[in-house]
Image (cartoon, rainbow, N blue to C red; front, side, top):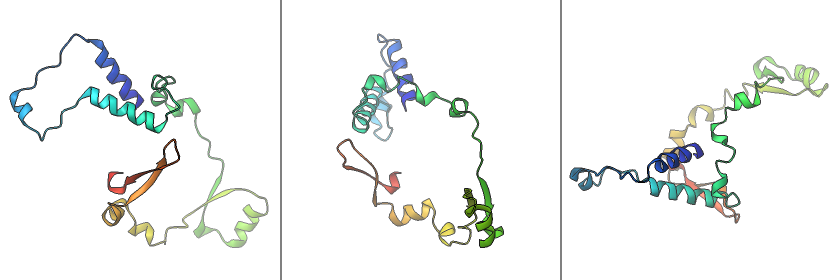
Length: 153
């Protein structure tokens, strides 16, 4: 989002003297076509930033340019060093001997393969059943819940 804001501000600041092209009469009369208002967009973006993170000044949002970072390049390759084992190939005794006694971590895969919800539950299923329901998606600076309808997610 910061990258979009930075690009938009750059584009808007390039030529302050140029006036935007005048829309044709047909475009003016057509209320169904949404027009992009850069100033309105920027104000909504600033308001969202102020509400979400009021401790960060608007001038600091692009300070470190995190949106443009390539995390693979910054962090390097991730080494997977925890053994993965299938629950279908691991007995209780084998688990105890290989992982529990030596206190060795592992990731057990396949535990949910036969769970009916894995096939029934999907986003379209929940959207149809609970689309109008409001769910907590965070908190504001004062600790109040921020809620969002599932069908807007």
